[in-house]
Amino acid sequence: MSISKPSSLLSSSISSISGTVSNLNSELLEYVNPEKPTHDHSSVYYKRFFISKFNLGDKAIEAKFSAPMKIAEDDQITVSGYQRDGAFQVLAYNNQTQQVTSNENWIVLGLGALFFFAVAIGLLNSEIVAEGALIPKLFLFGFTLVAIYMGYRALLIREAIKLISN
Image (cartoon, rainbow, N blue to C red; front, side, top):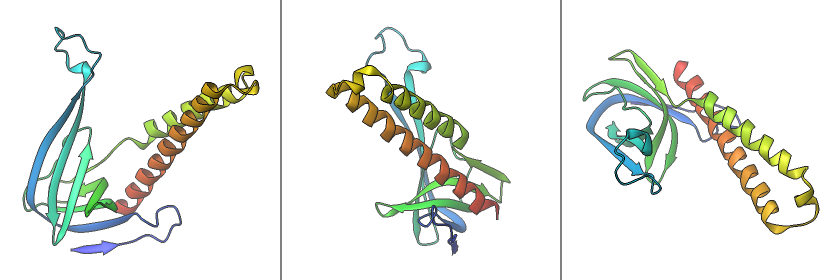
């Protein structure tokens, strides 16, 4: 098992770990939209997360992706992410055994951040906010926070991809 850390300010918490997969446990977490009609069983109304938990050496690894990870027991992989709640959270991975590299889509997150910033700027320039009403200010604050989070998450994923590609 090897661990490496980049020296960039943004990704000071991002690191990569290489090793052999052991104790692989994959599961599917599904959320149902509470506004979904009860007679409709379409998958469009479900939000799915594919969770993989495994060990790389003595490190506990947890990965949540919108598609299942392509890994198996005894695969040689490199994961890139950050430490949280006693487990290493994966943002991107490279499976050398199966020759697969995958990550969440940072471009969509970046575009989402731009959209939320545009809505926040539109609210900032509105007369309702200028008048001092509380609700529009709360929406402005909320849209700005979501945009910052999405932008930061996109940059983290981008840094994780750079780290495993080196």
